[in-house]
Length: 156
Image (cartoon, one colour):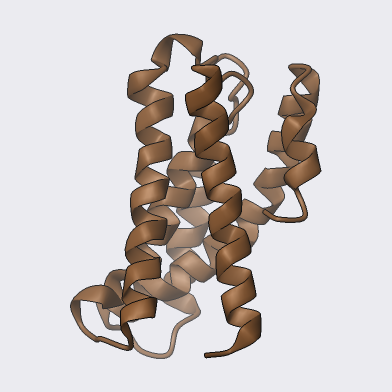
């Protein structure tokens, strides 16, 4: 086991758990971009499609399943459980401006045209775009006077 991968996985998992706990304890998802969380869930789903085709290790499989479950739990909390506290008027990112280019680039930047390879290359491109969305989300939080996540940005 690579210590750097373990550290990265655990810090990423801690950031996701902090987000889930913040939503659950405050009973509010105000200031959190639902569209960004939906895109993260989509990225993790397409990134980990190899769960159905290959087994690497129990650790690898369990972390992938945890990431997917936590992503969809966040989406559920935002769009279902605490829907009344979600302010869609401030979540103005146009998702199609990310999905369409990523879909096109995933067909151009891959090693082979299998569905698994195309989805994996697309998620890599999407992940780079999503890192810039974190900055937009932080600006959205600062505007809403909820700077709690700016302390955790290095973890994200």
